[in-house]
Image (cartoon, rainbow, N blue to C red; front, side, top):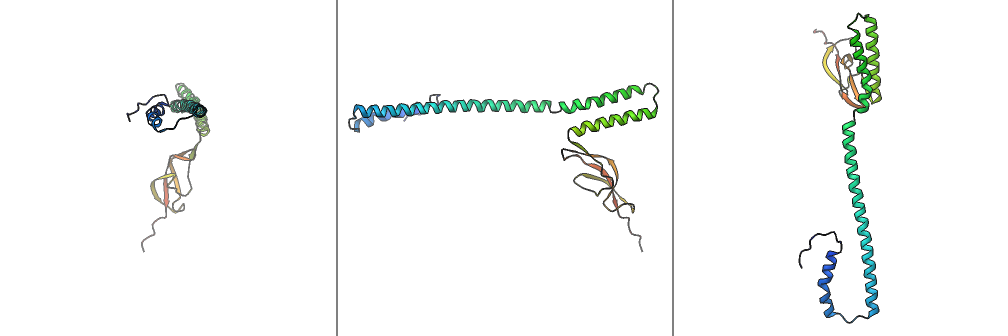
Length: 196
């Protein structure tokens, strides 16, 4: 049997196999009546029509899957390119406030008003971060948690329970309950007992 080249005709291999098999069958086969031949021909036509229908359904499904794959790929690329768009648009007013505050320092400004402006800007920033699931970790007084805190030093003291956070050097943050940055803290330790 000769190798069959791939083709878009789904019946090519069947046709070739039948062409090769028919002479051998004709030699051994008893004569067939015209009615039997017509019945077999009708069944063959129906089977070919059904196969053709399935082939068209397959091609349609294949094209649809290819289109879905390309659309999903394009959506992922756009998501990567524009993921920060909403977040940054929320941060822009904070930047504007900082620039206005900086510009105001060129003239004589009262410290109280400058402080008030900075506090308002910080509130704007905190609100923008909250909108996107960022939560502050300020564990002052809480028990040390190695999953959320980074101990920078241990401080012997009797003013707090052992393993309690006595000072927060840098606040930590969670993004949608996932650690973004651990809080850098000083942790209390029981003072050493005096030597007897």
